[in-house]
Structures are given as structure tokens and as C-alpha cells.
Image (cartoon, rainbow, N blue to C red; front, side, top):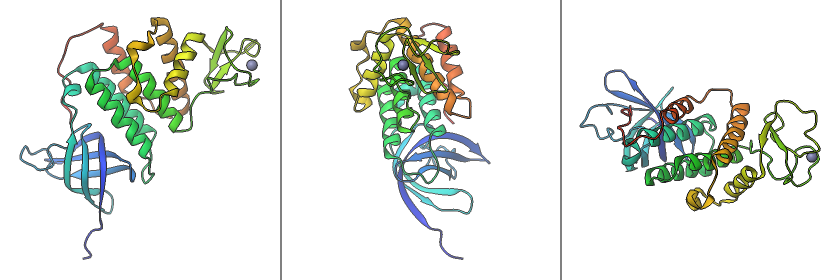
Length: 267
Ligand SMILES: [Zn+2]
């Protein structure tokens, strides 16, 4: 029998599922190879050297052996495990949402360092306690931009003139905003005001998420709502799957502000 081909990557755990008696099946996002499905054998045994490979763990020097169907993790060094966001149900829900979006918008064998970096930044900022709602808008806009589905928010999607005058309307199938002249007679548009459009432009202008300062943006509840509606409509239009963690976020929001609550166990 020939020895298995091995390789090394850095990776973040996007998804975990129990497998057999003590194994864990992991979906990993790596900058070098995109999405990888791999088995961590014995990882559910407390003394396993792979036990620390859990949901959201960021591991470097992850060594894998290429299998026929699934790759096998043989070594891992967990660098970041994001303990604070695991202890807070709201932050945990947003972290799950970020990971689910990255999962939906990445492919196996597709190198994507920028997507990987975006997700790691997103989780680090959640861990630090940044306002998750504004952070989520920045994350959504940057991830759709990276994936080539970024909405047109600078110029009218029809006449290409710069936007500013109201009323304006966003069309998910057109992927952009119509100016007051061009929106006449259009149906199914989402109303958007200049404040929300400007805020989205500011989020797009951030070189990376680490520069985000939600408290300085002073967004009104209505502006936040318009930004969210536009981005969610844009994402829903381009994804062929439902993002399950959004319903958890919405449920938590409808219950109002809560204190620190233990998140459900990860894996
Ligand atoms: Zn126009």
C-alpha cells in the first residue's frame, strides 16, 4: 500500500458534526485550499490531541492526509478559540452566521485568502465585543463584494448617474439602486434613503473590518434597518440556500437585550 499524501494548511472550523463513536467531521476554511471536509479521529475524547478542534477554532500547522473520500487530520495547533463569543448567545449566533455565509460562498480547492482573512477578522471583532449588528453589515457587504455579488450603490443601476437624490429604490434582481427618474413604474423595489446608502459606502470604503468604528457612525434604527434589508435581499437573491443562523439572530432580537448567556455547546 502506498503511503497517504499529506499536506499542511491553516484553517478555521466552519462546521462540525459528530461521526461514529468519538470522531468529528469538520468543514474547514483554509486560505491555501478553500473549503476542506476532514475527519478528526477521536476528537470527542477529552484527552485527544485533536479535542481542541471545535467550531470556530483557528488552527495553524494543520496536517492532513488525503483520503479517498475524506481527508484525515493528523496534527493541529489551535491558535485562537474565541472563548468570549462562545459564552454569549448573541455573539455566538453572529459567529455562526459569519461562518455559514463563508461556507455558502466558498468552494473546495479554491484558494481564497481574502475570504479567510475576512472571516477571521469578523470573529476577532465579535470576540472583542464590537456592536455585532453594524459588524454584520460590514461583513455582509465585504463578503458579497469578494464573491462578485456586490450591490451597485454608487451610481443608478439604470442610467449610471451618481446617486444622492431621493426617492431611491433597490432592486435585488438588478443588483443596484434606481435613481428617482429611473424608478418610475418599477415594482418590488426596497426603499432606501441617502443616509443608509452613505453608510453602506462608508462600510465598503473600509480597507478591512479592523477599521470599523460602529459608535462613530451614529446610525438611526431606520438606517440600520434599510441597510440590513438591502444586504439580506442581495444575499438571498444570489444564494440557493437558506441561511439558518439568521433565524436564530432574529429570534434573539425579538426577545430584546439579554445578559451573558451560555451558548449551546459547540460540537
Ligand atoms: Zn437613473
